[in-house]
Image 1 (tube, rainbow, N blue to C red):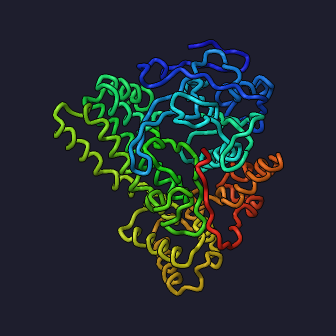
Image 2: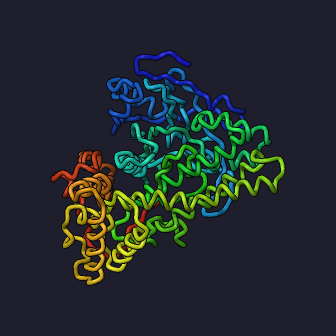
Image 3: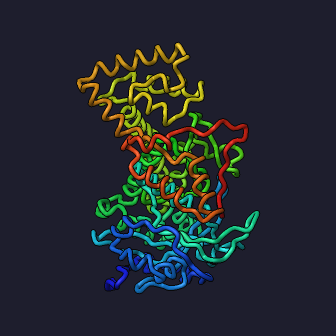
Length: 488
């Protein structure tokens, strides 16, 4: 472990001690004139870093990739993945892991630079990133963190002083990302397809030690490991669904073993409730639509299970049975997490058999009447049913009567139920039109104040403060569907 320095970097690079087949030592490509445009000060402090140093020219040089901090071991990771169902070799094409920071609390986190230049895995790409997509990841990942959803986080964004060329010329940028790790389902797919069983086992043991040390001594630790990953994914996807988050590109290389949300490309939040909602411009068939996210998570986990088969049992048929039996629990795990969250959104403390149909009935009405997902639950929270957009429906009146009767059958008071709803229904989400407004101001005019105000509103989504009301407004009607792009 390295000693602390003035900036507070405290690296211990365990991933670099894996077999070299899992990475390539890669230095970031220097940029012309890095300039820090946003720094996550609370996150930096929690990591044990000196904010003043990071705000200096030295910080910009590090985040831009021009200087390597003491103790870092920059590398690009190898992995594969199923992209829209098709398997391919991948790897960090435009990201470089600087190293693993050991925080004052003793936690180990990856510090990665995204957009830091070409790597051996760039597959013809330039390894760079545009400012807009990096700011989008900053906004959305920090909003997800505030919502209590496991996620990678954004430490800083710098501009590079160099253009990147996509459909047009755009300002270049690098994002400094913090993650529990960057181990992916695709990392295991890579090991299972192209490496030896011994290397696969080394990778699995590493993942267990880093994220699931409580199963290290289990007799069937690799099966226990898979079950733990599955449990975390069930909880994560349920949390996505409960706030209307759509990842947009749930390829297996975008599913983190740690259970964090990772890789914010064409992501967005749903306005009007519709399970078929797709924002990504490349998801033409809706594979990763909002309503498909739970089954796709199960599909991705099946690919992880396949990769682990050699470690589950020496007899392949027995290994398949073990994997299938474990995987069969995913749907139940997810549904249980989702129902628990939906009950909380409706102020229900206990369980009744009819709860699921009560919830599904409300969602059906919301879909039928194109009701806003977030604001409908806010209206119910504050007993303002007239603001749900459903009051014209006799069906909603009947549903409301059933809900009120259900609330009356629990011991907890109406005040307690409302508090549960306030804690479960965010007042604000990163509305797509607000995110675009902030990005346009920053990218086109160099005005970051719009983004800073948005981040402030999103920083405590359950505050339900008067200042958040403006950010809860839905976008103006439009004939043009909202589209997001990968930003690669």
